[in-house]
Image (cartoon, rainbow, N blue to C red; front, side, top):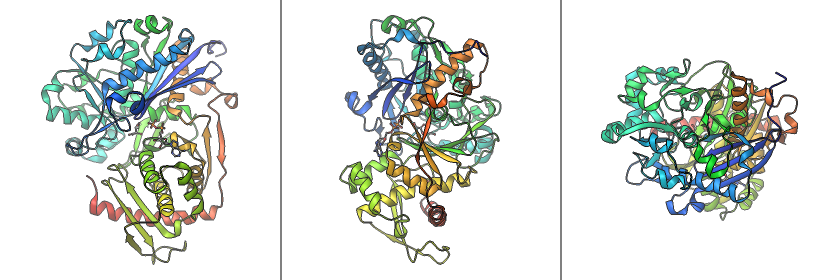
Length: 558
Ligand code: ADP
Ligand code: XUL
């Protein structure tokens, strides 16, 4: 494939439309980052009055949404910012992006016309104000569709059956249950909807000026796709809502081109006519691409608004917790993933409550407390958790006589509070003991060959050290913590190459033999320490899971 290469002096633009922000990363043809940009929803678009990029609707239990138009305005703003800094849009030959997974956008009848006839003299927000039949998009943090989850699982023969078909049992945040809820509660709105997009395909639609297809990888977060066939599953579609297939459109592989960039962007920002838009995908799948995760046994831990743990596998092994998705850059393998809702925002809450709102104080507490926290175990849920399915609340225990010996004789005593340093350690140890326990239970390799950490909190080396101690392996990071927009830029280059060749090209072709010269290179951050500590953490983990089981039996679900 000697003739196939990225043109010198070309650029690849990757976005990440996430919970709290819209980020952009630009790669050059040597795969080095040449530009980044960010719009923070709460502060840069304060008129939407979101907190953490979302609205928590206190009148409906578990409802968490974001204003769809805010995502549109964020795109107006980030492109304007790039333009104001004389960014040379002409050099961009491919654009792609990541979207927070599961979130859905409902296009009003007639909106495809609006998309096709966008006026380059006016901003997108102004023209799309009336394009949505649902103005507030349900997002991944929502947990209000428990009833619909049960209905869908029952209709197809149970939770495991649904997991066999789609890669996951029904989850409240998944798009299918959300669509069913809309159909049941507001049938007229459902009927007035011409098209349903994921956040990923929604953003791609803006760029191509037409409805973009849904990417097969992100579709695995909908509870609607037959993952082995990579087509919509008729039985699940029927269990969800009538006439749904027509509203979803078709599916496309992640490496496909969604279309050419719309004239709107050519005329308004100076993109070249030949710039292609590569299918957008979910943030986690694109992070997998951005972290160049290709070895089964390597584990990625993403510490953003959500925490996720993911890896790759050749075998399809669905389960009742955790998700299986197509690998966005390798049609032969799957991505396996665990997702936690109590992540950065929960860490922020404990930081604000116990560590004077300062990461420095938070880190000082981590440093001055002992590994295993003298048997203090904590469970902190500021949002309804996904894994395990526990409602908002916190639970603290002290293990009596805990000395790292077998735990049969160790009893736990529930307490109301810990001193601030112990609270901080209990939070972080608890979050990562849970990740180790659930990843082992899901069949992910233990210990992992190595962990690659990403996401906002991966900038915190004290947290990385604890991850290394608990999992008993080396921890790596990439140059920047925003691997979802980096992965999107890489996928833009990959899609461009596949488009040029007219068929799939292995993504490693882009960086083979020169990875260390690119911005994709992972660097060792924390070397695995004492194996005895990791094995004692293994005992603590078992105790934690015993208590977790009791909590789920008592309080499980919302
Ligand atoms: P998103 O999932 O929205 O893309 P990011 O990956 O950008 O989120 O992560 C944002 C989060 O990173 C913030 O909510 C913040 O709590 C966390 N963060 C940033 N710096 C630190 C730090 N030094 N220590 C711990 N967490 C941090
Ligand atoms: C994945 C999930 C979250 C969102 C966050 O299943 O719900 O990680 O993708 O953006």
